[in-house]
Image 1 (tube, helix red, strand yellow):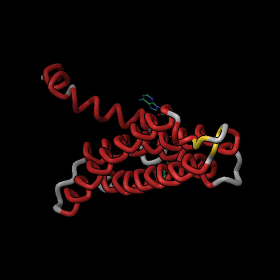
Image 2: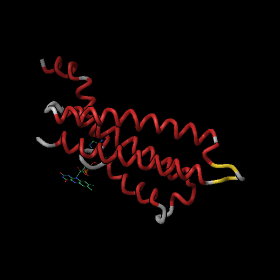
Image 3: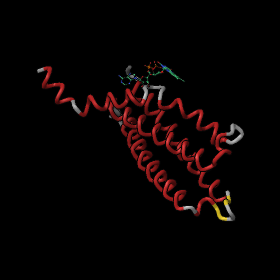
Image 4: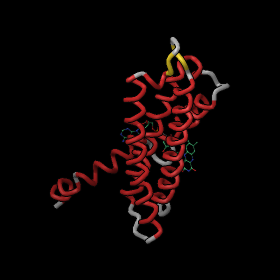
Length: 152
Ligand SMILES: Cc1cc2nc3c(=O)[nH]c(=O)nc-3n(C[C@H](O)[C@H](O)[C@H](O)COP(=O)(O)OP(=O)(O)OC[C@H]3O[C@@H](n4cnc5c(N)ncnc54)[C@H](O)[C@@H]3O)c2cc1C
């Protein structure tokens, strides 16, 4: 129990790095892949979805970096580890799902790294406390005054 915040932060660091890696290899893929003579990267859907992921990964990365700095200063709280773990694994998953989707049938085949990354990342929303349990913990904190008033 004493090391849970750190365990979740380690998980968050891995997830967000993996999300960025998935973004990078997907960006390369959509620039190479041509449909009816035009790169997939030129489709507005591809640009919108990738733009959204670029922003989300960046924002979560900043929070994870902040948590690492707080950990180094001895100030990491349980709640911070929970938020970092939940958001990084959710954004990682969203990026990997998009990476598979943009590759079409090729993304589903184990021969392609994105497929294996997709399978491997699935567990990150379960281990070290599932996303549902992360929400439960954050929710308790959000409504802590309410519960305190009931107990008082
Ligand atoms: C690869 C891997 C490595 C692991 N390593 C370790 C380890 O080193 N040490 C260790 O102690 N554990 C480890 N675990 C266990 C891990 O922490 C648990 O799998 C995880 O906490 C989920 O618990 P569970 O598997 O018992 O699922 P359950 O608790 O049975 O959950 C089933 C589902 O119910 C949901 N759920 C549970 N409670 C609630 C609730 N109150 N409200 C809403 N939904 C809820 C869950 O989110 C999940 O979707 C590991 C798990 C995996 C898969």
